[in-house]
Image (cartoon, rainbow, N blue to C red; front, side, top):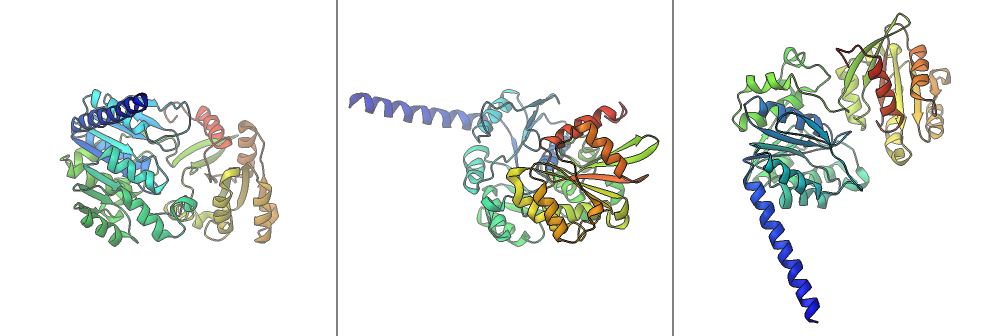
Amino acid sequence: MKLIVLLLILLISLGVWETARHRWFLRRIRVRVHVNGSRGKSSVARLIAAGLRGGDMRVVAKTTGSAAAVIHADGTETPVVRRGGPNIREQLRVIRDAARERCDALVIECMAVRPDLQKTCEHHIVHATHGVITNVRPDHMEVMGPTMADVAANLAGTVPRKAQFFHAEDVYADHFAKRARKAGSTCTRATADQVPAEIMDGFGYVEFPENVALALDVCDAAGVPRDAALEAMFKVQPDVGAMTLWHLEEEGKPVTFVNGFAANDSESYIRIWRRLKLTERAEDVVLLYNNREDRMRRAKDLVPMFGRELPAGRYVFIGEQTRPLVDMVRRRKLPMDRVEDLAGRPAAELWTKLSDLCPDGGLIIGIGNIKGIGNALLSHLRRRLPAEVA
C-alpha cells in the first residue's frame, strides 16, 4: 500500500513539474500564433512566419501540411521525425525547443483533427497570443461533422482566451465573432479584397489573397509594418503541398503541371478552377486524380463534380482502388474515351503517358491526394525542371 501511495505522489509531482516547466517555456516566447482551419493552414503559417521575420523578429515555425517541418530561428528547415503516429505531445517539444532558440515568436499549426484534441492543443499547450482560423471547409466530416455548422463549432474550439483572434471565413464569420467575445478576445476578419491582384502577382506560386490578407493582419497586430511583412512573404518557401505551376517541355510541346494535390475538398477545388480560369479552357485540361483507399469518401464527393463544376478534356485516375471511380464516371455518362485508368504505372511512365494525353500548350492538374504516386510524380517532375525553377 505504501508503495502505491509513493508511486501516486511521484506521478503527481512529475505532472506538476512538467506543467510548471511548460509554462516557463511559454513565458519566454512573447508572440505565440496558433493556426487552425480546414484548408491553407500550412500556407498561412509560413506566410505569418515570413512576415514576422520581415519585422526583424526571431521566429520559429512548425507546420504539419504535406510534410511536417520545423523552420528554425536561423531560417533553416528540418523535417519532423516521428517514431510512431502523430501525437499532440510533440507540440510540447516544439515549444520547448523554440524557447531554447530564444525566439521572439512561434507560429505553430494545429496538428489535431479530433475536436477535443484541438481544444487541448490550444487551451492546455499553446495558449496563443494570436489565434488564427483560416476557413471552414467540408473536410474530415467523419470526425468534425456531420454538418458544416458542426465543423465551424469544432474549429472554434481553438479560439484563444483573452487574446487576439483572426480568421478569413465568410459564412461562419458571425459564429467566430461570438465565440471570440465569449472568450474575451478581439476578432478580426480578413477578406480577399484587402490584397489587390498586382500584389498577388509577386508570389512565385499560386497563393490565395485571403490567406495573404490574414497573414498581414496577424503581422500588423504583432507590430510589423505591412510593407516589410509583404516583402518578406514574397520570398517565402512554400509548403511542399502548396499549389505550384510548373512549365515543362515534352518533345517540343509546352505542358503546364499544376500541383493541386494538397487541396482535397470540393469547395477548394471549385475555387482553384475559378482562380486558374480552367473552365474557360476545359478542353486543354487533363484532370489527374490520385486516390487513396482510405479516402474513398473524399473521392465519392469529388468525382461527381467531374464534367460539371470541374470540367476537363481528359480525366485520369491513379493510386489505389481506381476501378470504382471509373465506374462512377461511367454512370455520369461522360465519354469513356476521355477517361483513363493509369493506376500502377511508375512515375516516369505515368508522366510520359500524361504528356501524350495533354494537348499542345495544355495543362495537367493533380488533385485528390499527394501520398504515394503523387509524391513520386512530383519528385520526377522536379528533376525535369530547370535548376533555377526546381
